[in-house]
Image (cartoon, rainbow, N blue to C red):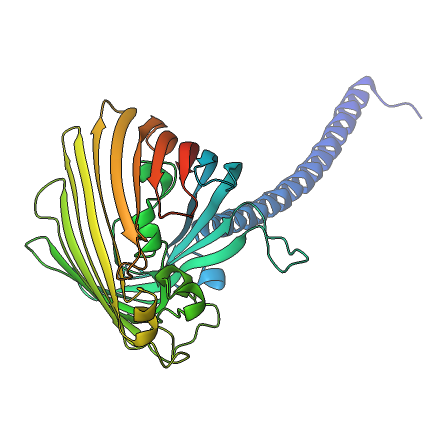
Length: 405
């Protein structure tokens, strides 16, 4: 059948319109489907972003120690440390005695601390001495692993605090501050080593009070020494290092310190222990330590001076002259500039000071420190000893490198 030309034209337009409408309907359906997919992807992206934010927050909390699931109501954790390597080249002046020529990584120390709150904190110090610990056939070893500090400190007020645990005894100049960049000389001075005896730590509790006039007072009750006749009651041999330490007799320590003038520290410590052998020696009795020191720094000039003495009761210590154990030293120094400093020191000490024979040792030290950084130090010193007849007498030089961070 044939349609008129006009009808054909109208029909053609109608077909084209219907065809266009179909395309439009199809396009609308495709757009709706695409829009739906986009919305789904958008939702998924938001969920992923939220999860990433949560993970990032958790990682930040873990890094700063503020995650309650791991650390409780904490603020921060921190660590540090120090170490020192020594080279000793010493000639033994006692005929037949052995020289001392050796390298020794004397101390490797790590500090760990944590602030639970603004007023409650933890502090610890773990030390490896002489680079390794190794058992030998004779039962000796090459070094020691020691826990020198592990205590909780509480601030009671702006001027009062207390600590409980294992801590350094408040006595002398070096016992509480002995990082190698803070003192002159490769080795720690012999008076504080043999008489005080540095480094000395005990377990117990300590109370600190600070006054407005730059006066501070410490009082502590803690584990004590345990000496014996086998070591002639030398106080250093009595350190128990809080390793299954006998506590039959506790010790009591009090210190008064004044820092009212810039660069000056004056302090004195008194300690008493009822039985320095922890009840194992009926011939021994109480022990009293008196220590006093001054630290003065004015411009480039410095001076350290210390005196310490023990008074031991009992016929046992008296029989070997150990009822008095005394030492002192004076150390002037001059800081040439920020990096260089020189010093000299004269020391005397005697762990059997009341015996009839000459048992005193004296020593002269002189040398320099070089600080390429305030927390890194290189050291040199020369020592000249004068010891009792028949004992080792070491003269020579020492080199050292130390750090603190």
